[in-house]
Length: 289
Image 1 (spheres, rainbow, N blue to C red):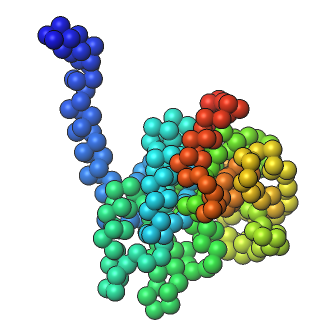
Image 2: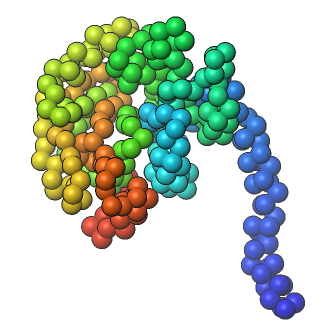
Image 3: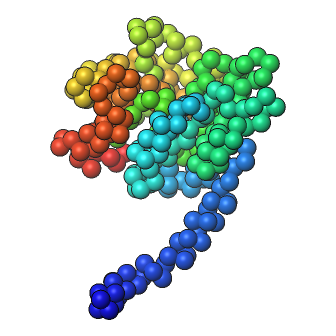
């Protein structure tokens, strides 16, 4: 028994020596990144380190969808998975997040402070979402663009999606290489249920309010079937907007590299993720942008 303990101490003595420093660093990080107002300060801090974040996922969610956020935090947003490939995920929590006095609900406050989420408040008189210094409009994704341009200018790719969408990390780089035309600061969007692609072009009015943004509208389409798992629906990319110099922004809720999780699918989000990750055709080399 003594020999076994001695061998373990010998093998892991470096880890044992580092443990106090790791615990202290973790505690310091937790205290330093407490964001009482839930405005995404942790994201701003990470984006300030250019080498750490290349792909930013902005995921819209509501307080009640805790299980979807739990899945994401343990899948594509998990630190051990995301950090080596320079991914970062921020949740924008919407809906009933405040009480009658306008204070953050305890559940919303505790979660956003722990994970660095952004809370999007509602105007108590109108019920409309109050965006971060960019006004009110139904195109809430586009309203968040100036915030990203100001705080995360070095990010290469921004992905907007709902919390029921699962990104396929192996085909995201493939999609970018094949279909994004290498045009800088591009927004890709797709039509939902046959809606006209002109809806994408209408967003240029919102974006033109930000000084220095250069807009360009074009069209793109693709055959998505080859990229999808059997039984999951894909929507073709319909059009995209070129914005400026060195960022690409992808707007989608179910395009070729993303799975919109159907409620009646006989599989959990976790199981779907594990199936994608373990598929033999998916090489770890595909994870790199």
